[in-house]
Image 1 (cartoon, one colour):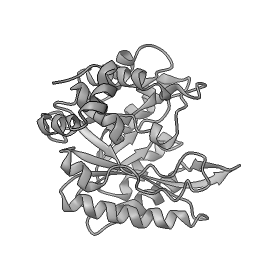
Image 2 (tube, rainbow, N blue to C red):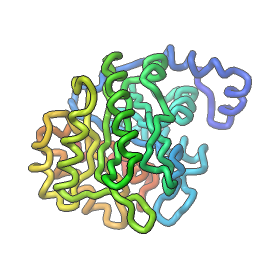
Image 3 (cartoon, rainbow, N blue to C red):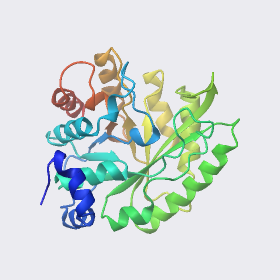
Image 4 (cartoon, helix red, strand yellow):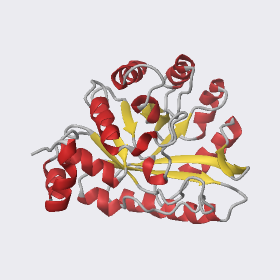
Length: 292
């Protein structure tokens, strides 16, 4: 039986077993449905301390508001599922909104935004065995590689082992690779064609098998480069939506163009849909669905 948002804390305090019970009765679906395309709404930002949306520093800190926005997004036709950390996914399980949806657990959130140890991105979220136990459908991990930061080596090694553990359980894992560097103390991802190409090549070769590996990739700084960049690997790809900014139509056009490329299977978008610069969550989600 599902609960309401105001009742979540009481259920968690009095009946923690309700999470496992909700996971056990959730109706599952194949990763790819009849359309052969994926639209996943992402909400794993808070666990990295990344709460900003636009000029609002703590926009994602209101959990009831975030859950309301997620429920609205998941209710729209064409939305396939959600990517989040354990706390958010378990709230959604208790709310009863994950039946027939792809549930993707976020695996490494240890590289906190702005921290000195940001590139040593430990796996502090879902483990492969957690995803299997909860009957979730996939995992996602972030792989930022800074050639000047030794912490990247630890992240590379732990990423490879996570890929192995997911493959042992026949669970897809979505790897989000970047070549990164620090600029004025802040980690910046390089979206040039050369850097994204190199990131794809490195990520595709990690682990003892790539059979269950997907790539989650940004659109390059010059969208016209994407066709050549995606020739680097035969692994299936979903596009990382990222923040849209003020020019929504230009961002949508970049996504639309990249979605036509043969290895691209769908789109994973978070703050742009949940906190749109203009219009409602429903309108933003419906626009994203139309791009597919």
